[in-house]
Amino acid sequence: MAGRSAGGTLVALAILAGVAGASGFLAAGLIHSEPARPPVPDEYLPQLVLVPAGEMTVSRSGEPRRAVFGRPFLIGRFEVTFDQWDYCHEAGGCAHRPKDRGWGRADRPVIDVSWEDAAQYLEWLSDATGRRYRLPTEDEWAYAARAGSAEPAGPAPLFTDPRLAWAATYVLEARKTKKTKPVGSGEGNAFGLFGTGGNVWEWTGSCWQRTYETGSDPVSRRNCGVRVLQGEHRSYMPVFVRDIGSGGCSIKPMPGNFGFRVARDL
Image 1 (cartoon, helix red, strand yellow):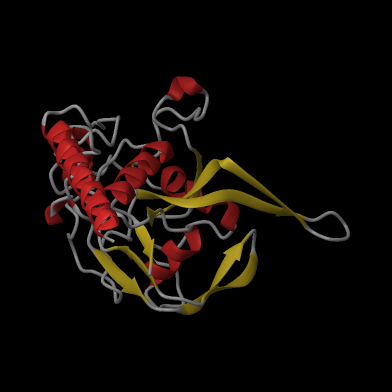
Image 2 (image 1 turned 180 degrees about the horizontal axis):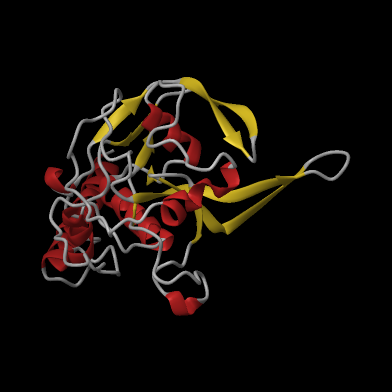
């Protein structure tokens, strides 16, 4: 018993010595630990509002359907701002530093960002906070923007044909370029969201989709190289909108200001 007890003591001392040695090596910089990622300061975190469960009627290709939201979710009260984006850029999480067209940065919604840029920001934010942030779907965005209303947010379409609604502003109205407004300008809707009336066009996580009639069963085709935007009206845009030369977008200049807001599941 005494021998075994002494042996156990020696083993324990050896383990303690090993721990102390490892600590010494760590202190000396010979063993590298993973550095702790600094938390994102509160002023650079998107403010979120709770959107309750519910349903609404939406129209796709002239056909109404019901969109059901069985669980509540969180969505950004405001669009992501230049301040929030620039913090991501300085932290090394966002490669692109978007231009502001001379309108100012700070609390204005970030613009000049492609869908991939937004995805990179969301990946960084998710990694930095330990919570999964994403883009809202087109239906989630519309539901949150309507805030319980049966009518879509924003102005009524100028064309009766819904397929032409996206062009109404540019064909029928002689408009000067509108500057973006700081987020929080004006009044929020019943859910507490600001900017859904058209401060910027907002990327969503939804792929372009169209249903074709084949004479028997309809066929639905999706193209995730084209994403749905929401804002002044619903529209489609290839994801490579910043670099015209990439072939992703042939429109010069781009037909609006592209930004986004975040969403998160509970």
